[in-house]
Image (cartoon, rainbow, N blue to C red):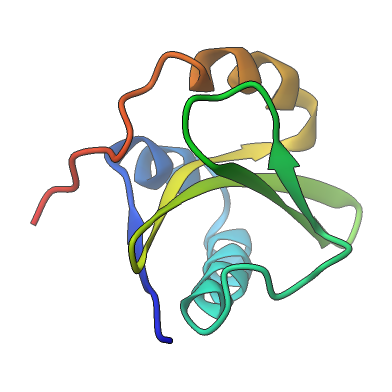
Amino acid sequence: MKFKVEFTKRAVKDLKRFSSDRQRQIVMQTIELENNPFPFKNKIKRIQGLKFPCYRLRIDLDSDSFRVFYGIENDIVFILRIIAKKDADKILKALKNIKFPPDIPQ
């Protein structure tokens, strides 16, 4: 089954904070979610305590580490946030209050 990857407005805003090289590397790894939403068994973690199924993808690039938080609804993978590892705890608290599935601009 093929999935569609959709970036929320917030995820796009997060992504723009990084250098263009980092953006490209992060997007390449998130694109892999189209074929399999759990491509890296050792880099995926299910987030507990949310009202919807939410997962965290760990992306390690050189000395930097990023977290991609995403949810799955039907055949769509919604990229909710893309952040540096150091900000992950703050974001987890905010994820409890988001609307899912999110509105995606067309």
